[in-house]
Length: 59
Image (cartoon, rainbow, N blue to C red; front, top):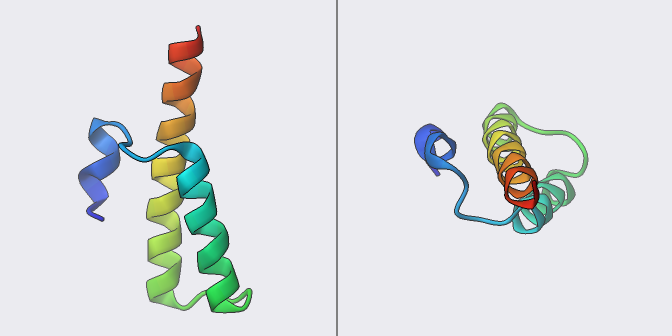
């Protein structure tokens, strides 16, 4: 996943991204390495974009 992927809107649903975030935390055992932290941050940014997109569509 590239950092610019969220710039054009998420192609993955918020639910899918949430599941990936949860899986990342489970794999990491609750403590993220620097690489996992970077992945987490990208997933959260993409998740937030997906949530915003869903709110705009609902409005």
